[in-house]
Length: 86
Image (cartoon, rainbow, N blue to C red; front, side, top):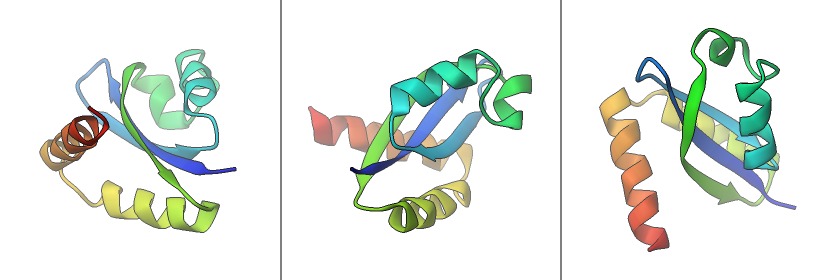
């Protein structure tokens, strides 16, 4: 089973980055206040993008790299994933 790195757009315009096996289930948890501490104070609006990785370690490394990006670069990355899916 794959792991996913996902980007959430929050109500204040910030972007949250995380990993999960089931992105939709994790998004619902974030919306219900049962996700990360960050999303409790910055409720998520939508999933911007997600990307599949073969194992948890690879997903964690990808998450760390994404967290180093600026919000603008994260949005560009999410847009590039959307174009690749189209």
